Amino acid sequence: MGPLWGPGGRRGRAGLGIAPSPPWSSISPCSFPLPLSPRCPPGPRRVRGWLGASGAGQVNTRGQGSAPHSQPGAAMARICGALLLSLLLLLHSPGACGAPPQPRGTLCRTKPTDLVFIIDSSRSVRPHEFEKIKVFVSRVIEALDVGPNATRVGIVNFASAVRSEVSLQSHQSKAALLQAVRRIQPLSTGTMTGLAIQFAISRAFSAAEGSRGSAPNFKKVAIVVTDGRPQDGVQDVSARARAAGIEIFAIGVGRVDMGTLRQMASEPLDEHVDYVESYSVIEKLTHKFQEAFCVVSDLCATGDHDCEQVCVSTPGAYRCACRDGFSLNSDGRTCTACNGGLGSALDLVFLIDGSKSVRPENFELVKKFINQIVDSLEVSDKQAQVGLVQYSSSVRQEFPLGQFKNKKDIKAAVKKMSYMEKGTMTGQALKYLVDSSFSAINGARPGVPKVGIVFTDGRSQDYISDAAKKAKDSGFRMFAVGVGNAVEDELREIASEPVAEHYFYSADFRTISKIGKKLQMKICVEEDPCECKSIVKFQTKVEDLISSLQQKHILWKLVQDWLGWAGISGGATGKVCS
Image 1 (cartoon, one colour):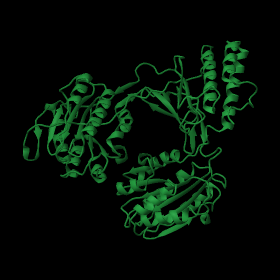
Image 2 (tube, one colour):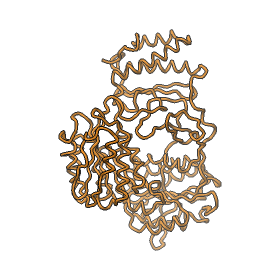
Image 3 (cartoon, one colour):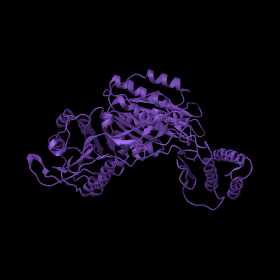
Image 4 (cartoon, helix red, strand yellow):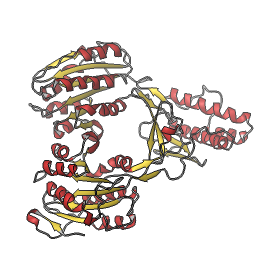
């Protein structure tokens, strides 16, 4: 533990630094989930099964137990059990699993890096929150190759003063680093973020502290975590840090000042600025830092995968994904068009900020953002309907729900939308959404889910609380998207619960397409996986597979007995729910 740095060069005690990173999430190449949909209502219905690459089978059921044959979940669990046995038997047959090859050797190594965590432990960070920070830092460290010739880690703790907890040369092993993290205590005073960054430049990244400086193949990275507004300036000192070759990631928690984060972070801001609502969910950022520090043998690039559309490399493995407008099927490989099944009706209204602060060139990017989401929908009288409202000092309906019957016409109307370029009356716009946009006279359908997407880049000039509350109380699912100078408190007030799933922020209009991709999956309406029709379809697939087993004479009698116990017999038209 180092001496305490404070204003005027005073020294004393202090300490800590932080950053994010979660446990590795490897995906077995021969794994597949059995449920009919990724999401299912809570209770005894959800059943998930998978096979590991070794061939060991597992079934995981979630929900309450029930008596045999008492409800669909029980029967479905037995079906899954029968299918699991069948697949286990097939797995021992040649060519049973057409899965991609197993990952070869150790696929993940971290880039040689001088990494310093700069951690806010001011009085606004409560003791239990500080423990979350320490867990977060530890999980990042666990994913690193730590050593004198690999990654070196330093930790700087700051409040009103700054303390070096760990220098880049003080711990040569991962175990020693983790032990040092556990010993860190909060300072619990003010918030001198600029002072902490200056300390990083002059001390933490110095040769005396173990930094390898500008040596080739070594990066210098600082991860700043803070939850408040600094009591000193950060813009100039952050610019000096970046000029010295330090890459800065800025993580904000709770009521942090987003402008301060943008002043600290390296470019591009969308990759270097992150926000979480509370310390309890900070671990969700860990995967990002896994990818930032991990060098992986890319199975996607070599073609060693079986993804139908998109292969995404993950540390040590890969996962499958789908193009815009599609959702991943339960086999984990193939894709289905979003909103293409039963129960996919949706009334969606965009509420778009057309104030002067947006600027014409950015307004064109907003229109592309809208059409990006429209592309993911199946538009028709019985499926998705789209409405568009623009607001500034007043509110203007561009087109109501149901006016256009296909995506082509909707996208053309969006492209023709003219820019209002005045004030920012978000409260007035929300009131219009509640009173008019989702009314029957404007095309809204009874009994159909209502979704509102509010897009803004600044502080509202009127009061939003009452209208935002009324929208959510009316059963509308509200998403809030903020860009640039958008106010976090206002966006959180607009967003439905849980706020973390309905609130999005980007520092730059040029990167809002990334938010668009997230929203596509959030608003994608899937058919009820527990519908009888779906379960019968699932049962048919089970029996088809079992028939193939019969042809191979593989323990057919045992499977038949199992089906009898489960109460399943007859052809594919049998029902397991009433």
